[in-house]
Picture 1 (cartoon, one colour):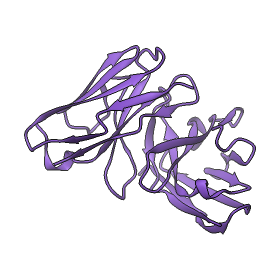
Picture 2 (spheres, helix red, strand yellow):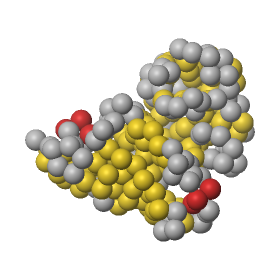
Picture 3 (cartoon, one colour):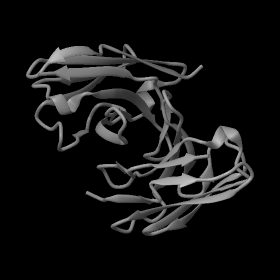
Length: 106
Length: 119
């Protein structure tokens, strides 16, 4: 199975900051990567797929990049609503696996 | 609107069985692959099982293989997860999740149903 490793596990930031979350795969996954946001008590929400394509309705301050084994999620100009846990996930081939999550806190 | 509603969770003892259900609405259920994803308390996300849109293929995570079975009834817009020989480590919030039409990413999530396995 492909292993996904996120860093950091926890990230402290302030409103207006630019933050970067990294996700690494232990095998080449091309751009078969998605990012999800999860708030406490809520289901995850798709933010980005194909490594860099923004899901409809997701604010443009979110962006994704990378290919192969290294990927990043960037949030430019943090808003109060962005404090949450973020997960990466590869989706080819099966089994799809998630990173362990990055908790973004104030 | 597009919606997934899970049910069937509860508290059970180790070794017992439970069946989760998910009713889909607002989209063409038979066109989408479907997943069960779980999240243990305070932990991350774990894919449990996937079933192809027509039910022709299924995959189960190694952690549940031989104990859990995913199935679907496209005539009733329903996804199911039969869970046998439950273990304490199966305790989690179980999400029903839609796979997108254009790839394996998960674009619609239900609110989840909680399974608690006690010894």
